[in-house]
Image (cartoon, rainbow, N blue to C red):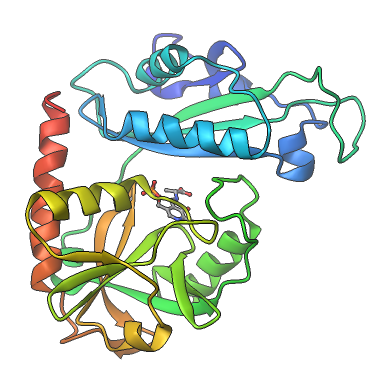
Length: 292
Ligand code: PDD
């Protein structure tokens, strides 16, 4: 394998090596306990979108699980840049993961002197299918069976894996989760709705992830005078919404046009989504040109 080929290389504990040579010991706590956190950071043309907010959130997740960040901010930036290659590079996301490391025995309590395991890899970002802008995507709703620390970007993702499978089995892209009658977020995305021209999204806190794409969409809304509100969304209100959107780093902002088999609004991507998507695409192009 060509050592200069960036696509084939992953980063593992200080080394850039071909993916098929990367090995994790079986006693790694990520493997045994899901004891770790992660980030997914998109890049366009060799420039990251939201790198600093993603690294800030990594710090918060690590603080929350009482794990020190094994790399400095500058080291993260340089590892991640090396994985995607110099501009103009293809559009890719970097998946990065820090686990508590390899302990001598399987014990929920971890000794203090264990070195975290650090892994990062670049993956291509699939361009959005053109039908999505005209037809939108389908979602189902499910009870939010996850834990109560949704703000931590934990690698323990069993509920999300189960939900995405259930969604797929019903021909849907995503499962929107509902706790105590209120919408929290998607299995792998944040949720917005539009009601009478106003954009509404559930407030951040322990129940959901503070999505970087969510924050960007709200910043764009603020900058361009779109009215928005961060407040609880009862599931019955979601069913009456004029528009529903999903947001995530790899899927951007998507229009949801069917929910549990029923049309959302008039069943087509709405005007507010079109406006937000145009703003988002414009922002992305600025990133691609290295201007942001
Ligand atoms: N997931 N909520 C959950 C539960 C998520 O898993 C994600 C993203 C988001 C959106 O966050 P952001 O805008 O920062 O990507 C919200 C990533 C993409 C994943 O697990 O692959």
